[in-house]
Image (tube, rainbow, N blue to C red; front, side, top):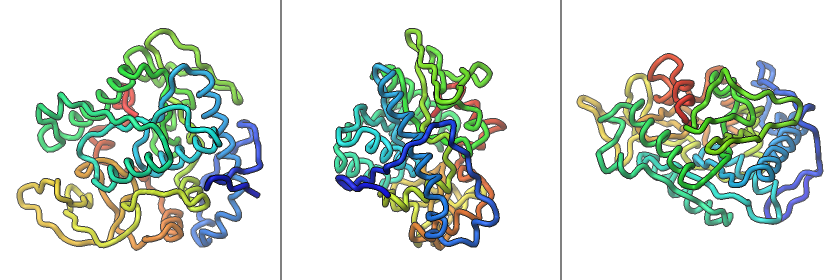
Length: 337
């Protein structure tokens, strides 16, 4: 059983990383209730939690100045809860870093500020203000160039300015094929770039943290988690998440096969007309670059029930992943998350 202290459930459980098995959802889980899924996979969730906490503690001890990339999404929320547990009852010993493109959903920014304040975490918000002042936006530049300026360059600048030698990220191997190639400790050269053909071996629970001046490591504590694991953990731990994940009637436009949610800052393209659909976000990003999905799931149990039947990536509605063949890997080579 778990011990609840200060609102955080601490499991009395320990396991070595070599004991972790990566479970994949199969057709048998689609007919099971969320409660039954949690019951059957609880030991698996505890093992994943133990592995992630080990990684967080190991990196915090090895690197001089780590930082946690906080995108406000479900994976970041799970990683943040794991960091709270890893260093409980003390505070999280590194800051959170959010790369703000100025085109995020207002609900995300509101949640970011209120939740960071609620848990007492240090929050750093970084923007590429020069690019924004020059008028950078996805409509003018397209998603590829806009993302390069407002996300990749902004991230690399923030890491350099902060002197951070390690950055925790919430990427998972099941999420996208280029992310499946990454190690838990993912080496970056002095330019912040990643070479998938030049990665360090990781044997058992041994990680190589050696760095020369200017080099850094991206650390991925959720590497072995699946999307189902993330949602089950959010359900078990009652982790607060952005309301955009829950289905409701929203004003949208259909654009290039995607359902794009409209808000006060949105720009309509010539000939576009809005309509109202019941939908939710499966993945969060910038307003114009992230599509919603039709859904009736307005509670966590309903999201879990819906999710286990999916057979396509959660990132299929992210425009930045489809600019060109191998788009995500090209961005990661340049220094993207």
